[in-house]
Amino acid sequence: MTRVSTADLQPRAQAALEESPILELRVLRVQGREKSLMLCGRVSSFYHKQLAQEVVRAVCRECNEADLELVNSIRVE
Image 1: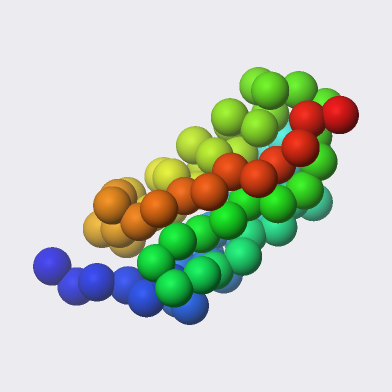
Image 2 (image 1 turned 120 degrees about the vertical axis):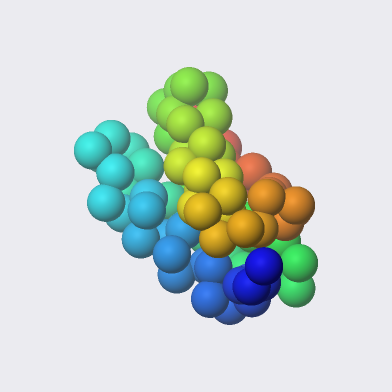
């Protein structure tokens, strides 16, 4: 299996959020770290926070990086 670096995965995850039909997800940011991705920004509900996490998790699975740490730092306001 080919491994994808965090540097390659971060723009894919960011694009997945920006292309979401959910407007609140489009303004969130994905930051790449050594072996993790961090979700940043603000949403109005815990549902949107979880939805954003699942969008990025799906990208990780597509790239065979399901074991990558995903840090959800999205604030609910």
